[in-house]
Amino acid sequence: MYKRILLAYDGSESGQKALLDCREIAQWSKASLTLIAVTPLHRQVVAGDGVIYEQGVIDQEKEKYRGILNDGLRRLVESGHEASGQVLYGETVDEIARYAKQIDADLIVVGHKHLEGWAARWWRGSVSKSLIAHAPCSVLVVITR
Image 1 (cartoon, rainbow, N blue to C red):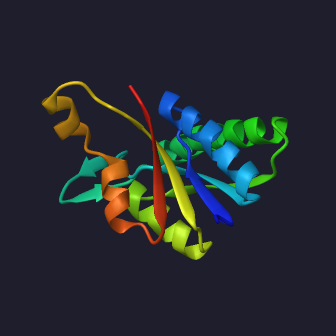
Image 2: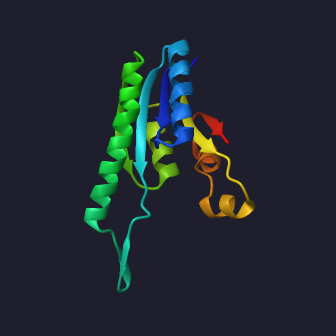
């Protein structure tokens, strides 16, 4: 039985489907829900010999993901669920796995959209596939096409 469910929420179509599935699982198992939105590290400016993370861009990205997180929390509250949430900053898979361990999650829920063509799959990579290899608990991958 799941007691603590962590949903990695990005507001995408597959993320919204994962939110719905997560809500049903939490209701069935009477689990607590925690949502996270991870601001990725890919926003950077290269200057000279090193990489500088431009604070203005970072702040804009964090604000964007705060809005995504708040939307997910609002949807859960409107459907009668209590949930907490947090915006994290870093490598997506590492942050999800770290936070799941920190809250002692029993289940991580993520959305996944099948991409057409090998080039799209290769270029984008798969958060869900990497997460399965690094997660400290079970992972439910909610698939959309």
